[in-house]
Image (cartoon, rainbow, N blue to C red):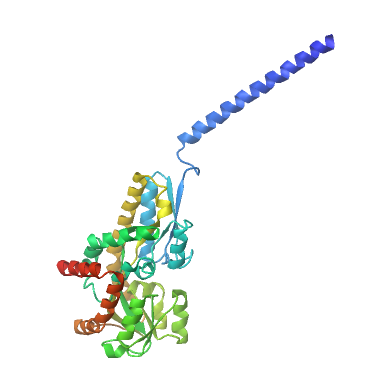
Length: 352
């Protein structure tokens, strides 16, 4: 009998200890949860934007991406974080855009020439000799035509945010300075992967070829190609001038990048978060706008200091080139959207 009473006492004691331990543990968990809530958002619930940027950390586009990141992280109190991947480390623009359609990457800043593979209307922004000045170019792309272009990306799985400018593209080569159409004859020129650009240079008598950017420097060194075309800031940043004898300010195309975000990711955001991202994209566009002319002028100065001559074309030479490639513009305007092209050109005339 005494053994039985002792057994019951021990059993009750164990149950009491277990109950007290459970209460203390639950109280501790509640306290920790309350403390974590007071500390602000942690890893749980934080959204991350993987942002692929084709340029390296020395280019003003990277600075624009940093401004984009800082605005979003500040205004969302860290509930949206932005990871910048410069130098095309996540892949080339086309590969990244395809990954965005699958929801594997959130954001990219491709050129209109690459975007035209998904939304052909963006070819209009790549047409040679249509924007006389940076100011006119910006008025058009921030106006109704630019907004319509961005809206059409929705059909391809993207949300278009803004169209930051990159400046004019110019021809470099190892044969001769370009002062007229005749100087382009038979030059092996690397262009972007753009049918418009390829056909335009063929019309001007050159021998253009599309080549991946990673192969361009070696191609110039080995003589596989005679030259290439890019904005001055890019020519300087990537040291293209080290393997080129002549740089000619042809200003044949005004260049852009386009901030696009995956529609799959966009749909996970509330309206307030979406507005913050749009604000950040406009801030980034303004960074590019303020820096492009300054960076190009500085790049030209530094290139000349390196001993590489830089020559400018006359307005008459540019007009002659523009007249020659007018059939090319009309051909691709018909393929893209002739009505939108006419409206774009009307906006250019109004802005002059």
